[in-house]
Image (cartoon, rainbow, N blue to C red; front, side, top):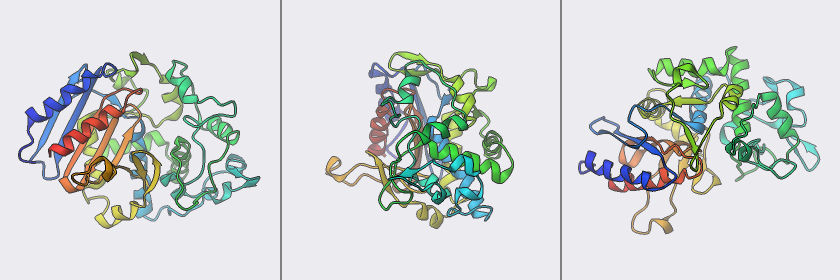
Length: 345
């Protein structure tokens, strides 16, 4: 790691904008002991740029949930029926004619082992995907009641908790958000904001927000997309910076809030889609040995988002990495860049 410096990082990050779809990027690398702390930005982004973190919000919601578990306010094996009304749950997950909605637990939601379809990326009854419509400029409001109605019309993936089965689903975390609201008697927006204040993430806000007016525009290919109606309906989408994301990913894995043993218990990995696995509230980016034949690629854990946003910890290298390439059509550039950085460390 001593050989890795600002020049090396700049050289790697500058190449992100050679991809015609990438308008800008920012990367922040910091070692556990903070002896190494580097930023590099390219294109229309700077080290201070606010950006949409997309599904990294799931890691923050996991943080809230897991702390409630540690305080014994809730239990991972609690059934959702303890907290949510029957009219919301009935018919939510039907498999081969049998309703398994009453079997759903908090653990199932956190680990994407519920079998619930994703209302955004899985096919609707008519074969279309709601995410495709949103990315093509059809901004839509998706309050939870609408989400539940949509999911009840979709085909389930599997029976909750089926061994070896997982399906990445935004539905899980929309439901989890409501559970947290019921348990704490606070809105999910308030709960998230409390985390931001606690960790001094002073440039992080729930969207939409006037405080995030300078948030970098999101791109789908060459087009900017506006999803303010969607943000307004979820109450848990977030704008942040690479610096604030670094504060958060360190807090999750630095041993202050969760012990190493506790984190290891979350590493109950299931395949979701290549090259990712999902544990209990955390995500793993991996590279099979066949793609890294000369040496094993190190464990990388944390979370990513659909815009090419990343917040990961690399235990073997004792380093944290936060970044975005801010492009929904080509988020893989963030991981190509991540691999280059990790291989240099």
